[in-house]
Amino acid sequence: MKYAITLSSFGHSNEELFITLTRLQKQGYDAVELLGDPVSPNINTVRDTLDSFDLDVTGISGMWGTRMRDGAKFQTNLVSNNPAFAKSCIEYTEYCLKMCNLFDGKHVNICLTSDDQRLSMYEMTHGVESPYEKERIIENKILPVLTILTRIAKDNGVRLLLEPLNRYCSQICNTAREAGDIAEKINHDSFGILLDTYHMNIEEPSFEGAIESTKKWFKHAHFADSNRKMPGYGHIEFNSIVEAIKKIGYNEYICFEPNLSSDNFKESTKQGLDYIKKMENSI
Image 1 (cartoon, rainbow, N blue to C red):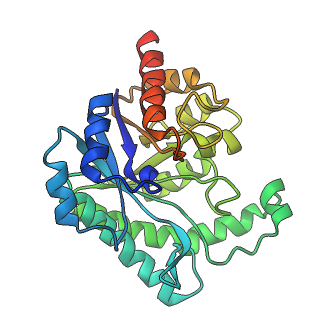
Image 2 (spheres, rainbow, N blue to C red):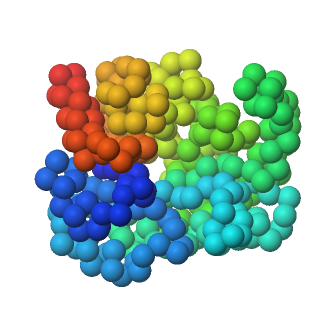
């Protein structure tokens, strides 16, 4: 297995990229995952800095949802009733795919967020939304767009990966089964699934079952504990997850995607990595 970490996890730090990469390489990481931020530091500067290290780029983490940027809303919701927002989301995804190609990455994750969150908090937390309504949105809005984006991914030599989010983040695709159903309908080599342990901990009855059921489309993993910290800092039993991943024959990157606190982030990235490496070597 190879190990990576998302550079977006260090967004709280004012540390220079060169210093961060120096430490990560020394700690034993094989790669990093970049953030698909259109207003991030100059891409050529980032690429030149990365060229100084023996670290690969696994891919691009997309910025999905609605956020404020310079006093205005930055919309990257694939499910939208606003044609302008829907168009800009496709353009943003294409930007991420081209960026991934530029850095010789393998994939870009995509999440099915919506700017039309019609469900009440009760419905979101108790799961009483209509399966029929979900299916209608998927068939009429999502599949046509994902088909287009998968072709663009193929043209750029990378893969588009669907990441299920927990119910507090999205009303559309929350489980490995739902992601697998969509992947079967897209049915393309340039499309796959990314499973994130933080979201799985909320939605899945079984980590092993979710991984086994999606083994045909399983192309990448994000690791974070139950509290979104590095593995070993929460209550998820990662031993069964690592074992299940190895069982399906996956031997690519495990990418850590934690929220890092400002007080001990330098130590926790090393401790979390060692925790999973030791676990993998014992299986």
